[in-house]
Amino acid sequence: VQLVQSGAELRNPGTSVKISCKASGYSFTSYYIDWVRQAPGQGLEWMGRIDPENGATKYTQKFQDRHTFTVDTSTTTTYVEVVSLRVEDTAVYYCVTGGLAIWGRGTQVSVSS
Image (cartoon, rainbow, N blue to C red; front, side):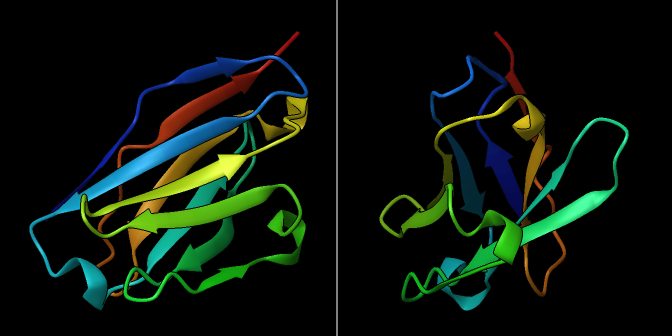
């Protein structure tokens, strides 16, 4: 069972980024995928989740406006896209299987002008 995330990204403010998380080794549609981030010097923040079975999403209020979770069941991959990036979006973004508690290794997103 593993989640493999895409590599580090460096972006300018105002642009967008899309992070992928490819699952393998388990029944992909049986478990939610949660997205969590950790900004420098901060604790973990739960951003929300997506149900790979039907694409239903749930977002923490803070992440409702500029963040979008999507899923491609044909490749067992989920994505989070962040638009209108801000410097404060700089963080490590993790995907996690709900229920199995398997974590991806994280994707560093750095936003800087």
